[in-house]
Image 1 (cartoon, rainbow, N blue to C red):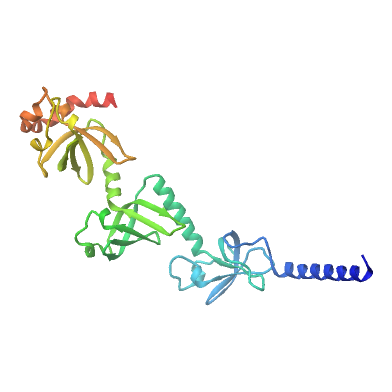
Image 2: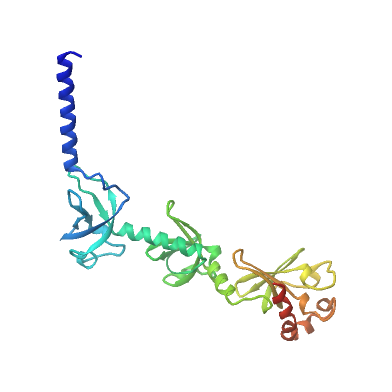
Length: 302
């Protein structure tokens, strides 16, 4: 290598190192967008506050990012010289300053909490904000959620739900797509399940008759009385035995809360094969005593 090339290489090398050193002075590469950091507010201005997060430059939190709720006085949510958690929402600018948010951190925590509630099949209290053709939009701990019309217990007069607080279960909790879909019916079913047990006598109304069985509404929870559980005697056509809207008493044969299934039996109430078919009124009239007799048997089988 000739001397000119060596000089050129040395010049390039020293220039690069100087440039790199200057960059290091301005920027602190330990702080990246999406990172949660601890810091202390040391100055509050009308439009935001400056935070010491241990970097070469102070960080900045705009007023709109101070809290999920509307804030008139920043000092109410950003306490001077007290350590708090912040989320970095914007990488360093030319001066090495990052932008922080408490609001986005709160939102992240709420999504995590709601996902955990969904996993545990818990319900949540929501407030109805607006109504549209497909259902209602609701406030869920500060986030915007949606309940489809088909998952509301009141589907005919949605306007009457505005401003009301409802108990709802979760259908979808997806932070990446910002989807939060809930169901009032799921919550009702969950509440009802907590009061049900195998062997218990329940009362409901026939809502559907299919070749394989009869669907019964138990105060918002749908149950199935399978054709084989209607009577000890063979049944050719259930429509000859039941009518839509007919009140019926039956014993709970099986429960599956995860799948939302309740299996019923009138067969266990019979004193002899075919009694339900021959004299439904008598079976229903003395259903409580008959169920008590069958209860121990059902509980032991489960």
